[in-house]
Length: 500
Image 1 (cartoon, rainbow, N blue to C red):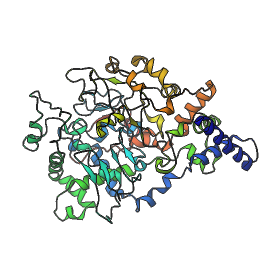
Image 2: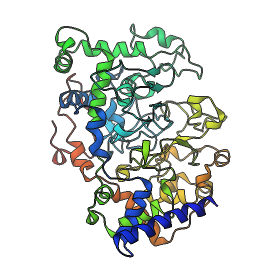
Image 3: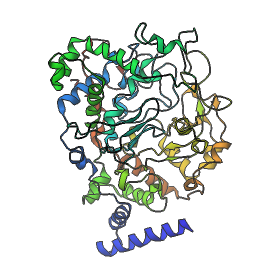
Image 4: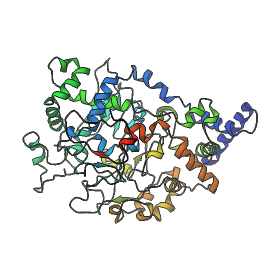
């Protein structure tokens, strides 16, 4: 009954638009569906007004240098750019991320122990009201630009409230920017810095040079890690000078604090807005911005396939193609091999081959296997799909959504194209499918032509051409202020970029 009502309402909108456009028009059909969905194609132009100020280019450039500098990883073996790679839209090159203890390569040949999930893209995160695959960093107001209710983070952080009338105009990214150096698998490592944070890790030390905190690690705190990172920054003359250019108190002899670090990282992320795809230009009246195939695919997306049921654009979705809510979509559960150097995370479940998703944060079994809806802009830049990269081809990821039960039940990791070390351990799929979201419960029947058009729309109709590898690779600095060796970025060759 609900599907029938939705289809009828979509048909009514199309018929009304056809009358307005003067006939049976592909452009009119699409325009009607976009209006019904609440899509304007103007979200990028709202950034400055919603931020309440222009982006600070000087602070953003400091954030860019920090992004690529391994100084902020306590073992000097990883930085933001190791997982958030320019050539992939500042997203992952892997199905499941490789953070600390890596091979100093960012690209398809990156090696090292894996974490638990794929690193999401950072571009356009300025408009995300919930960050991370389980939405654990979020704005309770539903607006990443609104700190009136604080920004909510899991323990030990809690709610982050910036001072009222803060001239920096607080944003969710400013609070989240303080987190990556404290993440053990991403940057901090498990052994810490001797003398600086040893007491923190002694309670977890297994005597083997690594220390995975137990599930109930209430004694774990992030501040000692932050202090160790600050010690590094404050002992760097180059960074003291650079921070002094943006923060007068540092120029006057004061110390760099972690809010400054978070703000610099966030300011760089605010420059990574690429939300002017062919669909946006079409919505603004440039009907020639899209190909016929892209238009037909968009009509399938917003019409019969009802993809925007989860991949929403209206309201707090900020035209990012995500409702930013957690759902069970039934993605196959893949996990790294056991053993030294294979993985840095103990997976969930009796076989340690599952990911319980949002339950890890809420503690509520009703949240098991739930993950935040993935935003779809610039999807073509991703080498893998779903929270764990269990599919490596966009066609397969789209086909999965059309009949999730069938696809998940017949999943073969090797056939999906994932790396060899992720093809040996599959978690059980039956308990996942028992919780499958009703929006995916019934298969969607598309013709071969409709399917091809839908994939084309997702691949190119939502792609902002400015997010090209050449443009994003140009953000890699020639060197970093610490003087540490740079990560090697596969695909970002000298001929393709002009480093700054």
